[in-house]
Image (cartoon, rainbow, N blue to C red; front, side):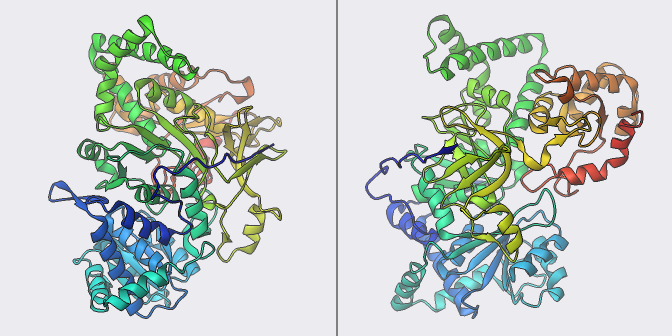
Length: 613
């Protein structure tokens, strides 16, 4: 089945036009919006604005500075940094200088960076801090093509050839009315088919692959999405997902294009505090963040005594009933309406304040969001617009919108993008958003883009009668038991992770008689329970070995699973002492579990679960 793209809606105002290239997007946004707070960054304890004009000047000078370094016309320039204004300056400087940039996750260890820098043939790199500069310095001798290391901060000295301020000074020295005009003319000569960026997949399996994305790939995605979500004059976004990942990067381009101010979180650890300071109205995130907020809300409700707990669960029941009516397209009235208003005042207003008090929309992507968590937020008055896409599709394939919204789906395909379901259930996508291919990997490219231009996503899904796309699992993650039964693990894992005693869950069972599950407990909750039960232990390993703890976790994990066939239901639970992390290699930088790594690392524990087969 193929879904034809819906026609694009009218432009929001007469000046705003859909960009054909990212350089056009940049210059149009500066010319049209010209606001004092295009970007915001925390300096000296408060958020300070950066105007469109200041940003445009710094981008121009950085671009002219790069040209002054004598980089070749086809140079590839890397950006190794956390989210901050300098990331955007470096990115737009590369785009307007017509160099393809190569973002690198700042959480990656140096050895993993080496592969990317070599594969992409990077000749210059921006680094944010002394820590990131030191990583590159440790690799420099094995990277003969890397000739320039440019630091954002003046105190970064390890192997640094130039600071960003010095690069901008080089550009400023080259400025004349003629060179400024020439800079803009040259920048706007870029075509939609020119390469804008090479983004390496975080790789849940195998070595990373560089997805070659053109100006047209990303610009077409922005053009399609910019009319699907209503933006208003005073919208503010908080940027905290890694800009090295295509989701936040495309979203920040979109915000810039439509004139929304983007504030940068100081770090992932300060996001909650930054929500209160910035008070954003629209935010993009990944399911793991929503899962943690949900878990914290439940934890606070249960820790507040009987009265508080009863009020919370009453409010949740009321909100759930309200959501059922609203999602059915009806207007809640009568007793339900006033009870919901009371539930908002007593309970859900506090959750709204926690995310700044002004939020109009969350956007979710990167992995499937559990429907029960999405419905909880919706019932609380916080709408999560769940979408779907991949690095290779720039990224958006489909998204829920305020007008067309259905929980449990990832929305309808965006304008200009076709989706169909292959006979084996795989989701195929075709459109202007599909990458050129993988850098230096023609065979891998042919494996995912067929002769008719369909990109094979590797995800399993279905289209409903109204054209909404539903993701059921990752094709490579499907578990086939020894008895030939197919199990989609992600929905089951999402059920398990909704439990307050669970931090992470990974289903295992391929080619085995039955499935089992590895669980990382939520130690805050488990240790409170252990204290209440007067259990004695000296460390977490001893805690997990306690028979009462094992019984408790098995009851929480297995006893609350619903709607599963017998062959889908995990038969055993193994408890893991340490949570998964990016640093340990068990999570991608976007917090998706690397199943093969987990399977390999915990093989002895897994084998023990099947020892009595």
